[in-house]
Length: 524
Image (cartoon, rainbow, N blue to C red; front, side, top):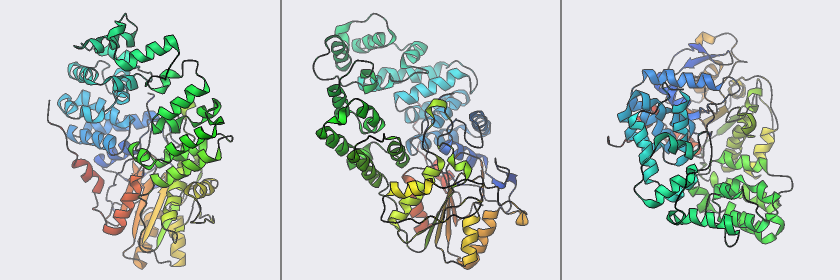
């Protein structure tokens, strides 16, 4: 299946006294409970191949877990992952699972998960693929999709019409909505290529059709992807940059460069101001790694002011990085597996942003707010990289991301702290969590990381540990305890969690409890 990808969400792991399984890399690890496994996969699962696992394995894991978990928890996980995690593919998959498992529960959460046209199309794609069982929608799912189509605004429909596999036209043909309004009937006919009443078209669509004929006047307010099929000049592209959403502008900086938008200094200033607009950044729910991706992808010919604006935007996106009292240590994993794409291998659509880039980003952001913090990169051993806390987040992230290779020993930085007999209040480890190079003797059944943490706790009994897992596997290196928080995925929310945990602590099963608190709508 080919679906949208992103990373984020949080999860918590199971409490065990000894390692009871092996991870994907062959090292010893701890197993998650079924609810925690589903939360972890929903959190970070990209349904694409990662360094240690492939998309089919992830899909089968989710389906197996869903079969044995109650529909309400599945529904709450889908809503939480979509509304709090802003994820796309896994919430849609869980919605499709509910279409087979419990249509009443599906109806309660459909609008919360399928909250835009992209999500509607993702849901339709998964059902029709047969991945969750039968390929037909069934009456209740079909009616829910019809309701979405019959209540969406013209703007929502136009945005939904961007993309294929399936296209919105495909969805309309699948579910056959019966519109009551003349404008909606004309619009559906226009969408699927049937004869339509031009005068009945809603205003934006009619303006688009008029513009295609005359090629005069202001560009219509349609999604820019609908305009790019037309022959546009630099002035048209400037209008697109001026009128586009924050995310559209971020995603098309190189396109604007190729079409000479930045040939005029006033346009450079206009785009730069849009990129660093703090209100727009927050409204767009920008994830820090998206900014990192944009920064990495910019052409060498990109104006300096644009790259600087992206750096400013990053500072805004991570404004909730906490200043933590005490001695803080941040440990990014720079091993070989961390050089894999953060959103998995996706053919030509594979993200340039790697797991190591995100680990470096977290470390650099923490250092910016906590200049006294120690940053200890590691693979099989620790790596010394001098960093200046005054440098930008992007600069320090790049320094860290440029190193790496070798096997993974998550215990390495803790072992170093123990050899030094260092005082520590908070340790943050950012990794794909596939430790194997430190498995050695089983140390009474403990992982290397757990062994070293227990030694450190004897010296620093109040110390706390955060393990940030970037990619979706169902085993962990740590026991679930009140002094340990394990977070799956990455967003700016991660920093808030780290701050809260450092100051207040959290319960041992915090994230499952958070999912359980999710409010569901009444049955329609």
